[in-house]
Length: 126
Image (cartoon, rainbow, N blue to C red; front, side, top):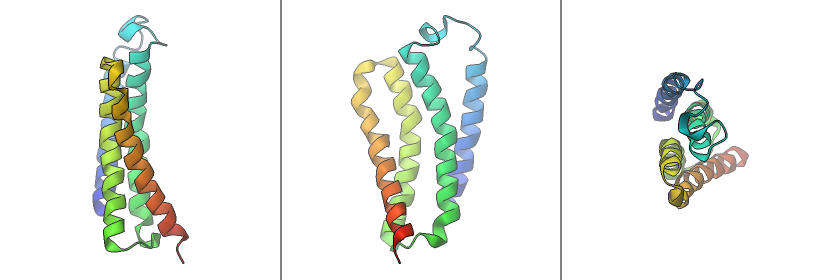
């Protein structure tokens, strides 16, 4: 799907820009509570998720013709991959701010699992 390809490249750009922003502070050992602190680990996870989930959306777009799903299922797969990618860095940032928001993490995880499962079934379908 073209929207996933465009979104994927935008998300990679966001990952590079967030890496630039994080790189301005990484040399400070006490930044966000230190290297091993919960907030700093989640912020790094959010940064990496931009890149990885951008690539996932580009990969989905390039596999589109080989994913044998109906129009509705293909649309659901497309949108759940985008929603999961949008929600992952947001949830990471929110959990870095407040540990009690951890249940929000189910939003990107379930969304990405749903989209990926649909793609796998569509690829295995004869």
